Amino acid sequence: MRLVLIGWGAIGAEVARLLMARKAPVDLVAVGLRAPRDGLPCPVLTDPADLAALRPDLVVEAAGRAAVLPWGLAALRAGADFAPASTSAFAEDGVLDRLVDLARAQGRQVVIPPGALGGIGALAAAARLPLDSVIHEVIKPARAWQGTEAESLCDLSGLAAPTVFFEGPAREAARRFPQNANVALITALAGLGADATRIRLIADPAAGANRHRVLAQGAFGRMEITLDNLPLAGNPKSSALTALSLLRLIENRAGALVI
Image 1 (cartoon, rainbow, N blue to C red):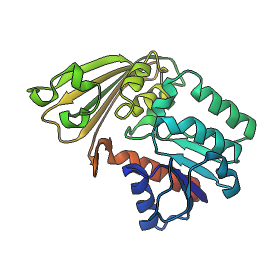
Image 2 (image 1 turned 90 degrees about the vertical axis):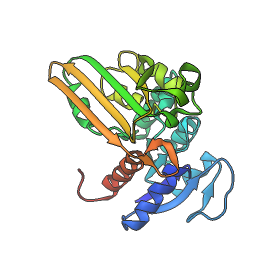
Image 3 (image 1 turned 120 degrees about the vertical axis):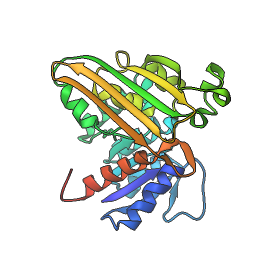
């Protein structure tokens, strides 16, 4: 399978490292970046229009929400499927619709990875019947919220107990906290949508991991999913499971057995 990665930050580099270490049946043919860069294991693209010449089967984005629409449109036009990790881009009106409409016209797919959230398959299955409520709590160490709007909403350095500094719809959470709330849009897409899914963002001075807790009720019954994810080395704002979920997605697309 011919793969193009968009972005070479902590997540993209980790995905590439794991693919090589596991000897996955994947040919990493290029990395898409904003500017040229030396020292990467494959050619660098800076123009989405250059994707077509590479004939990729799958394009995986891990570069930030601004990269989703231009690289996604180019990937689908090039005949590839597109997997965006920066799902907070879908908080903007029309972005997801444009990608899905083009995918339908091209006979391709927009594939949403689960990111840091396990159990998303159970929520998506439950949503085939009516859902009454979905609440997603994102609990992270206080330092993981540094550099975000949370700094103006609570005293991150002086917290003595877990503090809810934001509660609202997934669409607003993704707009205001794009680096830390990508997974909120995944939960929303799997369940009740961006406006009916409730998100609570919590800074916990005692937390040693990134915790996601999803509570859903509906005609299927009730579920509660809790994950404690260790941060990705070198980037406390991202969970290691985010990179692992992209790895699983890629290996499932390339392998004979899909789980």
